Length: 299
Ligand SMILES: [Zn+2]
Image 1 (cartoon, rainbow, N blue to C red):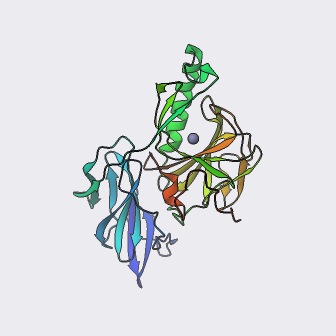
Image 2 (cartoon, rainbow, N blue to C red; image 1 turned 30 degrees about the horizontal axis):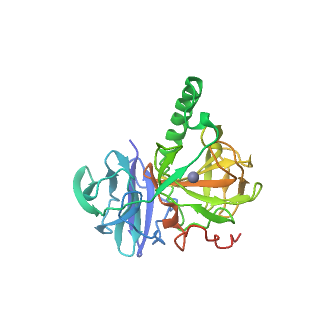
Image 3 (cartoon, helix red, strand yellow; image 1 turned 135 degrees about the horizontal axis):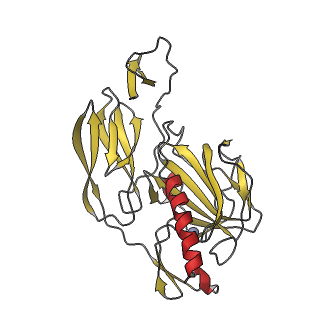
């Protein structure tokens, strides 16, 4: 079994994969101190949990069964944890293992009440899908689930995003939604309204995981930023990338459209951390305000 080894060298940290022996000339993969996201230890938010000094070997962190992003923050390790929208407020814990020994590190989730949204969808099939639609939805759910569950070993170079579209914030994350009066899942992303054809840009560097056309999400791209941080872009009019393609921050991955379940052209952008959909706004330099324009999208 491969095991991650790390050595502290002249104050900087090098991580390398090894099978027991330390290679003579290891390719360094560093974990630089990071620009952490704005924290919000609430359901649908992100907790940054201190794990103590930079001791070695590098700890492995889990939240329930899911691997969690570990970062260096100054002279300590921190876990960057996505908290599910369905999480209960109160004490939660991480399992931190070092050399087979597991310790619990607790953190507190604060309560949060998201607003309600009531939408009228004219296409009834989008609210009450047929049996055939349900079969398609089920197949697609698996593909979507696998994409979100990705945990690639390379850490993201940055945890700060740029808005992927030049537009107006139209629907915030977390809204408790009712379609035609029927309760549905809460809004698991951030919507940005923009005319059809507006370029959609990678908010941070990443590798294209999956592309497809799905019943609810329309034309969709998944972008893997690393260490369980994954973006999903939906309702696109056109997809301009292929799986495996590496994108720099600001690279165009497609165009805004109105495919799937929509009331007008917009980008639905989901951000997933440890396979948990969290508020994308926490990764932007300023919180998104409904109706306000996004800051200009720089290359
Ligand atoms: Zn949306």
